[in-house]
Length: 251
Figure 1: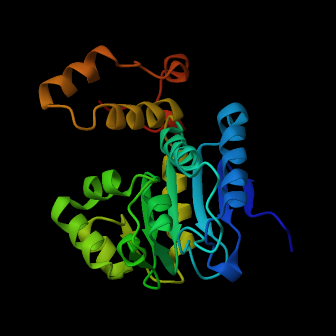
Figure 2: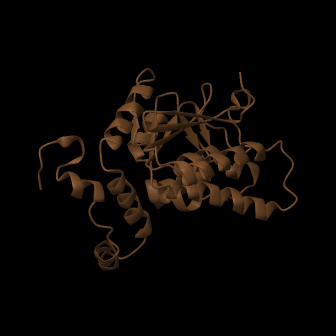
Figure 3: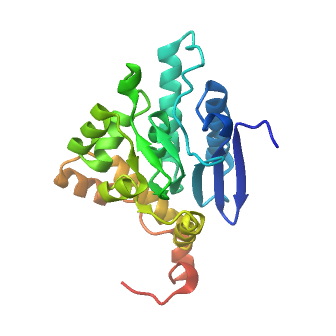
């Protein structure tokens, strides 16, 4: 056993960050957030060997949300901003980020998952925004990221009813990219990671940047941004003269 609130495992280019408060359904307190921030700092500074990041939870749950039993920070708004910025930094990492979800993915946990590029779950997953049950409003990006995932009407439904949605529901509405059988979740995430690792890291990073940087732009502005802010070919590809992995060259 370990006292770490966020476990990190690096293997084969995949960095797995596991929220580790299983007895609390991985509810997030300030100590956990600080550990998570330290891992993000390290990946930003020394993560050249990391090609894909997987965020998940220990035990049978992803994350039950913010630990409401912890007293508020003395500078509540300042700390809330720090937490929001940590999740924004997770999104803006050049590596693809996958949220692997089992069990509860509620409120702050849902905001954590929405900060990933892809969400993959199994039928045990339960997604809900319960801010309204506690008289709260989002502060970690849910009001912005959820409607961008599922559309405004569905986001309002989730936020105003506070009802839970199954993994199958999440995949049907586009919240989750995949809902797979409970014994296939690890395999599916590994399969997606392998596909991403088989491609140019330069391309993966630039594709993410273009998508996020142009979010909300009109089509014409987005097309101009893609052309004028284009990072060009992967330098490694120029040297090799062949696709990543040595596959037959196609255009």
